Amino acid sequence: MEISKAKFLKIPQSAGVYTFWKSEIPIYIGKSVNLKSRLNSYLSLDLGIKTAQMVNEANSVTYIQVTSDLEALLLESSLIKRYKPKYNIVLKDDKHALYIVITKEEFPRVLTSRKTGDYGPFPNSTNVKTIMKHVRKIFPYSDHKLGKKPCFYSYLGLCNPCPNTGLNRTIYLKNIKNIKLVLSRKFNVVRKNLEKEMKNLSKLEKYEEAKIVRDKIRSLDYITQQKIDTQQFLENPNLVEDIRNLEIENLKTKLNENCKLQIVNLQRIECYDISHLSGAGATASMVVLINGEKENSEYRHFKVNQKNGQSDYDSMREIARRRVKTTWNRPDLIIVDGGLGQVKIFDEEFRKLKEFSKFNILVVGIAKNPDRLVFSDGTKMKLQGETLQLVSRIRDEAHRFARRYHHLLLSKSLLH
Image 1 (cartoon, rainbow, N blue to C red):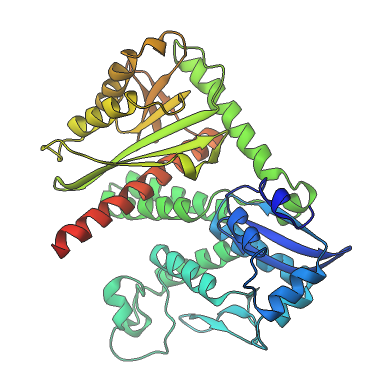
Image 2: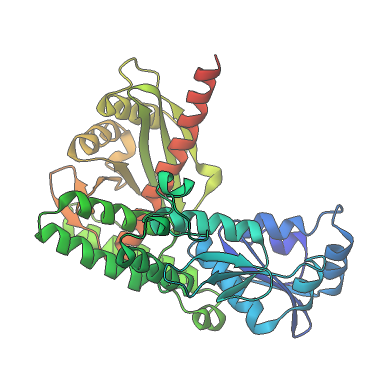
């Protein structure tokens, strides 16, 4: 598209990679968690000299939506390595791009380098370090030379097992192997290996160890989704939109197979989550998907007013009643984080609406272990494939949004 405010209004507010072009030559490739916001920033009058020069030289821009921040980071690196745009070098102010290096030692270290490495180049060092912090929480690794005492990070669980102890090299090498797979964008392989390990531990009745592996799977799901080949993005710029449409259609089909209501549209999906700490600072969140895409402008926070903030049921009923009284757009599907009790509460409140009988407003809950949807009549629907990806994405977003407001209220309370 041409570089203009009018054209940029149509850009989605999602993660992705963008490219500035001079005729048929890519001159700069970047990434962002919010494509619309980032590309609009290039229309500012306060650009640096080199950035302004790049924008003036470019005559068009393209973008590719992706499914996660990690996917955007790795795709950006792949495209820069392939096309070597000149401004990706110029805008670094003579600094070399960052690489990730995995050493060939008895206990391999994971390091970053400005010269060369196994993975990269990554143009933004801050992004790389942020992603590696997330990865390190799932698969701990060492970045220090061998010593005689366990390192500081070993006490935080980020260098575990610590090479300084000389123990559990097999476990350590397994972590390194998984890190290599993640950095190679082979997310599905990592997930399948972890699921196999979790099942084997469960069979051996090692439930605590199985729980640790399960938490690794959830953390991995949080920072990324299914691996998509770079070539697929290049061949189909609307790939993410097509994936979202497929997710919506599959979910609609599955819902109609398992409930009495016949769902015609799933244009607007709302998801609710309650967050509190022993009843203190109880909050709720409402996040919204429009046609499978996050619609940040529709998100809402609720401060729970009822005294018994520790009761999820009471909190959910309060939020349901407050939602019913609003004039916001009508949802096609409501997902609540919880089981049958929470579902019935929301269902009861929405049935009081005059328009309920006119419109098919379906309320379901999302339960874990295994992931499944729960209907108001007690029916359960197993989640897998595209339906699991869609529901997990909105549930995780509701968790994140609720925690953010909850932490804000707790901080204010502690300060007072």
